[in-house]
Amino acid sequence: MRILVTLITFMAATSLIAQDISMTITQENFALIKESRTIALKKGNNTVVMENLPSQLDPTSVNFFFSDKSIKFNEYHFAFDLENTQTLLEKSKGKSIRVLHPELGTVQGKLITVNAGMLVIQTTDGELRIITNYGGTQFVIEKSETQDELVTEPTLFCSVTSSSNINQNTEITYLTSGLNWQVEYTALISDDEKNFYLSPKAIISNYSGKIFQDCRLVLLAGEIHREQRKWSGVTGAGVQDMDIMMKTAAESDFQESTGFEYHIFNLERNITLDNQQQKIIPLYPTFKTTMTKQYTYHYQKDPSGVSVVVSALNSENKGLGYPLPAGTVRIQKRDGDQVLILGEDNIAHTPVGEEVKLKIGQAFDIIAERKVLDRKREGKNNEKMKISIEFRNRKNEDITIRVTEPVTRRYDYRILSSNMEVYKKEAKQIEFMVPVKANQTNTLEYEILYTW
Image 1 (cartoon, rainbow, N blue to C red):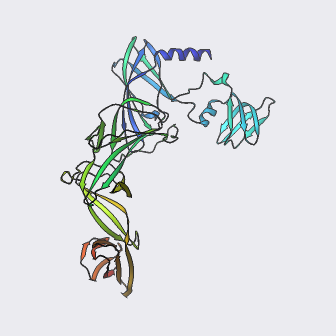
Image 2: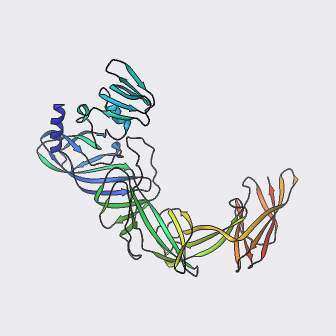
C-alpha cells in the first residue's frame, strides 16, 4: 500500500491539465472530443494520469499527438472501478465484505468468487456462503483495504518516455457515447393557410458522465456508418436538466457549412454542457415559406380516413433554401389569441431542392368508403377487379383528394375503365385526383385487369 501511495503522488506531478476542448457531436449518440493539455514530463519514463473523462469513453479510440517528436508514447490503459456494481465487486475479490441481503440477512466474510450473478463468500468460521441472486442487495466493502486501490473516476494511465525535463503541449482525441443532438421544428401555419413559419432548434444532450466546460461545439448532420463495438461504459441515467437558450426569431449562433458528405453546424461561441443536461439552441432563424395544403387517401394506411398533408419546397425563392436535418416537426396554428396544436410528423434529412411533406392528421369532416364491387377470373392467368371509393365531404368548401391505389407488384396490370382520369401511373401504384363539392359526395370507380 505504501508503494501505491508513492506512485499516485508522483503521477499527480505529471497529470494532464485540460486547456482547450472541442466537441463534434453526431446524431448517432456519440461524439469525437479533442482536448489540448500540458504535461510536465521528467527525463526518463513517466506515468501520466488523465482524469476528468467521460465514463462512456471508448478506450480503443484514444489518440495522442505530441509536438515534440522525441517523446515516445509507450502504452495506456483505461480504469474506472466504480462504473458499475459488477466491476466494483470484481475489484474487491479477496477483500472483506459485508452483504446485506433482503432474504438472507447479513453475510460477512472474504469475497472469493464473482461470476455470472453469483457470489461466493468465505465466512470467519470457514463456511462458504453462495448467493445466486443479489438484486436489491447492499454491499459494504472494508474501507481500509480498498480506499487506495480503487479508481473512483474515469482515468487514463499513460506511459511516456522523455529525453529531458519538459512541459509538453499535447493533443488528445477520443470517442465517447452519451453525447447526442437532434432537431425539433415548430411549423406555425398562417391564418390564410398559404404559408408557415418554420423554427428549427438543436437539442444537445449530454449524459456521458463528464461536464464539458467552455468548449467549442460542432454538430454533424447525416447518417454515419459505424461498426458495432463493445467497450466498458455505463448507460446514462437520463437527462435531468434542460437549459433552454432561446433567442429572437432573427438570430442564430450556428454557422452551417458542408464537410465531406455531411453538413456541419459550428457554434460561433463556446458552450458549457453539464452532465445529464440538455441545451436547446436555435439552429437557423425562423423561415417564412409558402405551403400547399392537400387531402390524401390511401386505403392500406386508413380505409375510411382522409389525411391532411402540407408541403413546401426547400428552395430560397420559396423562403427556405437551407439543408434541414432529420427531426420532429410540431405543426401549430393561431386561432385568435390562442395557439392550436394540429399534429406532429417526422422529416428525413432534406437537402435544398427537395420537398418537405408533413402529415398533420385526419380530416374530421371527410369520410371515405372503399368497396370491391366485382372480382372474377376469366382465365388461368388473369383477374379482373372493379373498385369504387365514395368520398363524402361535410365541409363548407370544395376540396380535391389525391387518391393512391397500390397495385400488386407481382403482376402486370391495365386500367380497363375509369370514371376519372388517371393522374399518375407507376409500377407499384396509380393515383387519381378526385374533386368533391362542398357538402356533397363523389365516387371514384375504376376497373383493373391483372395478368401473370
